[in-house]
Length: 228
Image (cartoon, rainbow, N blue to C red; front, top):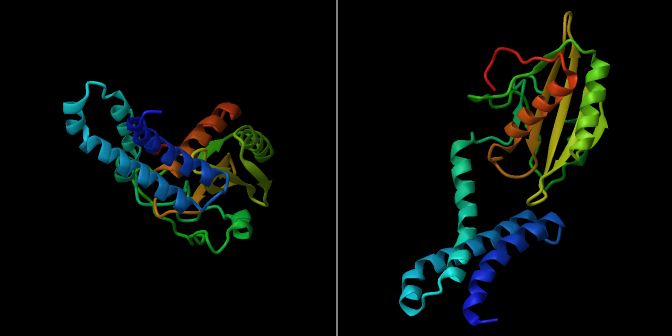
């Protein structure tokens, strides 16, 4: 392989290897982040030397491909600036569902479980209401979680689940609380990260997506008059 191809190739291998190694637990997540950062810095160097390379050769495609991984941290940065600084989101931030399974699973290396009240922000997702019975909601929600590949366990108030992210293999904790009111069934959800001060909007997106899917399965469900 020509020597000028090694640096672009390494710029790709560092983030891919860092993420994959964290995903299969070869090293901790922060080590994977360092490797990704190394790949981004290498891509930045390739970008800065592009004018020099342009004077020496007309074949700049290897260098251009080596710059592409720099887009990944830039996208993360944009997403972090747009998302609220939170790692624990609930449809009921003042009385969130309890993460009972997470209390058993979290270790000293994980973040502690946040006490109520949680941070409420603009666009905070709201609860789901339905005419379906709690038993029907529980069955549909458990089946949906299993289809999504989540690890699920029933609780006294509903369901707990563990979600593994596809990129770094981060494990997030989810709780679903089902409450039968006088006229309808209320469904509240909570999603919390085990690592990181910011979830880059992942927990909010997870709740919104799950509510939408569960709403479709229940048929007669509807959302309250509040912005998600």
